[in-house]
Length: 131
Image (cartoon, rainbow, N blue to C red; front, top):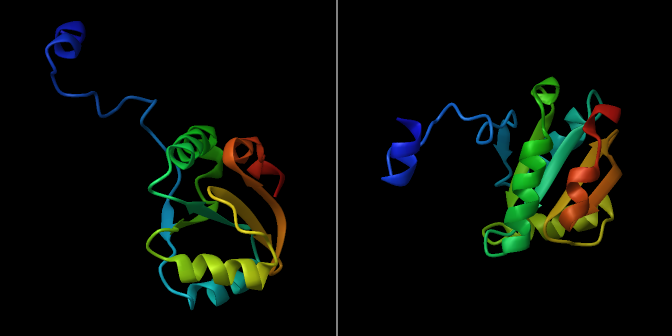
């Protein structure tokens, strides 16, 4: 019945592997979280994904990043920043971590410093297993 459901608008298969992501997004919604990120980065690498909800390129980059994130990375902490809602936090990230603002942008933080970053379609090229 899968084909008929597809043709006639049946329910989507919620167990589909293409929709599955192993990312446990941590919302970045307060400036105080930047200090927490720095402290956590002393013990393990931390990622910050800066996303513009109004930009189609940002949405594509986010989707590609999610697809590249496999089960072996499920414990990797990834903070999600909605740039439209939390512009002040994005600006402070630029100051504290000395990176130029991009959107979308992925930052990898270790020992309180950016050790890797990418923007746009290069985001999916960062190999998180190396951190």
